[in-house]
Length: 156
Image (cartoon, rainbow, N blue to C red; front, side, top):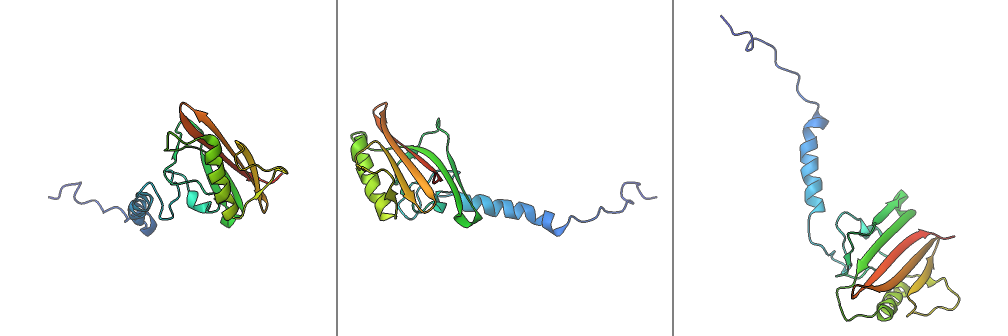
């Protein structure tokens, strides 16, 4: 006499795409893991795709502020991009005007043009333009550290 459970037909096998899902998940996780700095000496923020913003020179070593909102989106092959990021300088003796001068020089090297008529590289609030985009960079001293806020939007 056969047991009723053993005599039942086996269930249908899973579809191929569903069997591959665990492998794809492991590969995705492995690709996302890694060092907190990219190979290009730029800041890398976990969870944000800053490599899609190669012309926004956020310095390596500057860390994001977790209490601030962060957003980095690039769609349509980079035709539409939005960036909102607040970072803190690692150097405690750095002054906001000094940080802004260094950032301004890197922005010029990346092809950005000052949007203000009377541009001052040491100014704590700077607007930049490149193509159809506008970048607002603001620096301040907060709690003994230099904080820089980056906002990339469509040009108005």
